[in-house]
Image (cartoon, rainbow, N blue to C red):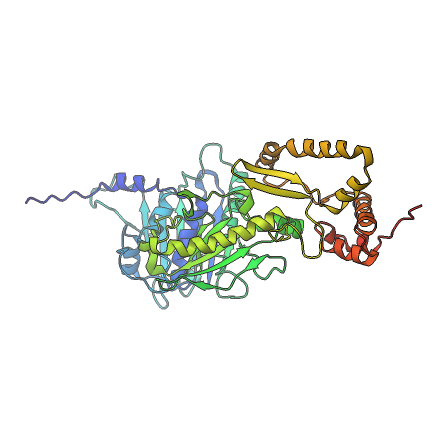
Length: 500
């Protein structure tokens, strides 16, 4: 059997690898991974605007490389992805440095120094590859002429590595200006703060990440320790595997958060896009949100408003990359079939809790629709084979009191209630919610205090005169009823009006 050698053409191969799908934030995250694997304590990223001469530089104080190690690191596919990695290694394919860099720039220069060693420097330049006749895959020694000063910080360091991107043709395109780079820097900061939040958390104080001289702050998707959360489960270990753990979270409803907290909790992509599983390897976030293809009846769960408060932390070891189908971009993960039933059960329970919190704006109600020692819910949801319908509860204390006193108007009131029930603008509410990325205002949000007081007075009168409760009992019941439980001072001030 004949065998032929068919190596790829260097220029064509490298140009093709530029299209893997990196954006600047994800490309930089791949380089930070290398720094973490090199035991760096501080990583400094700098985006410098200079029109066509703009550049990006990443400096870390990690262990550094000697000449042979650097050459191996600059080689494409330098490591076999099937081989085991050290416990703290964030890499897998031996491609990240090169593919991430080429996705943004045509020139990649890496200079490095080990403790006690000399500075070594190698460079890929896509514009020069086709012109070199002495090597099929020409790797140039030293920085490009005129770029030497950009590597000078390494001279003052005992050890570390500098990665330099130049000729940023995928970033500085036609019409791109300095303001666009500032906006891009904001996206980079948000992505890195999310991706490495468990590594740069101040409580660990072991790793620092800076962008243009400013420390990047971590973004905690789970609002750990927030007293308004409906669920913060223990950490569960997944059976039939090793090192896979899960923790389930249901965030507070927006109504339970301050305006500044609401925006932060929504995350870089917004509340709905950030719901679902957060997959980590060595505390580095791989996947932010989504339901890993889990669902019911053969249909995957979508990201939707009703479950926007559900977030689940999922940790996997770095020897499970193949089993979980982690891709080169570290942006996809698929759980093994044998683990899916366990993940489905935990996710389903978390989604159910999140839906109830969302539906009741932060107050979890039992299935009966009656809060413990509170009033009956004004609206009842009925599900049947014909679909879901919404009905105003005739047992609600205020409505029951009005109907008892309505006399000849009782029939008209009942007809009005049926008209309201049959004309609820469900589709309009759904559209407004989807377009505004927020639920319409209810629960007296933003209402004048006089309106709230008027409603409370009517309910108070109905409870005392119709239900026969004492004023103290009526106040107690109102204090346990949403949304009035948010206005304790108004409830305390309630007094029975003179019946005369």
